[in-house]
Image (tube, rainbow, N blue to C red):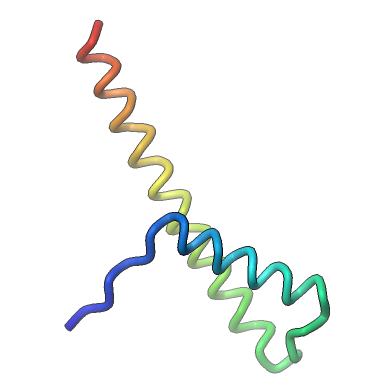
Length: 65
């Protein structure tokens, strides 16, 4: 069974946690690379979701004209 994709809110919360851990120096050097990769994945996911919503909103607004 496939994992469900995170929501935008969940992705942002995970990103905030990763950033806070990095800023607080709570991440071990051995896990830092993995966390940066995970942050990159989450940023991409958020950008894709924002782009999709933007396109949907534009389409709806065009229909109103």
